[in-house]
Image (tube, rainbow, N blue to C red; front, side, top):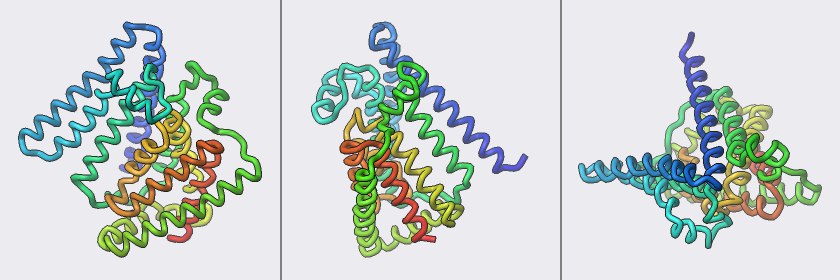
Length: 310
């Protein structure tokens, strides 16, 4: 059995385990809404790893290791939403329900990821090298994110597939809405064009690294069919999860920040800032129309970018 096949199996097994854990957490969080013992268990599930990560971060900082900030931020991200007062403050600026156990769990996980990535970027601001990415890996990633989105909104638990799709904002578009979505592509290209120009001017070393990493990511999808596949796959998966599942609870700004931080291949650059504002554009489409509009914009944008770079 060759190494690439083993790597693919490892990725699939890891993603399947992650989906199973997410399904279990969704079930437990839903049950905790009316079961005090389940709520106590939920606090333990979040509090124990959160506390351990916080202690790990403090221990590393005490030992002079700056990586402690990464683990401390992740730990606090898990713990802070357990406080009703903290949730109430976040709810003043987001659509989340501070009394919802489901929203509490979601906020813990989102803030843990944001805290981890923020300090990871601060300590290692250079663009992350990804190496060549296979078609199989892209397919598994796209499918994983879409399935995860449906799991997080309670499919086969408290929602059926149609209800889950409605909650995710997956609906039809009118011709006018299609036109608005395509017009948003122009806005996205303008934003990313300015961000790219600023990076090339003020961060030339980063610009070269970003270009190389982008070439690695898209090397197997540089044809027209490949570009369309990549555009649709990335657009559908990222938008279904981020704008579909996460944004309706935690708002445009938190979701756009998470969206930007997930693009580690850009490092701390103007391009990363452009990705953030692209997330805001997609978030506005989600709010004003639906997630399908954001998917269309994202898919067409990605397809154009891949074709221009090939």
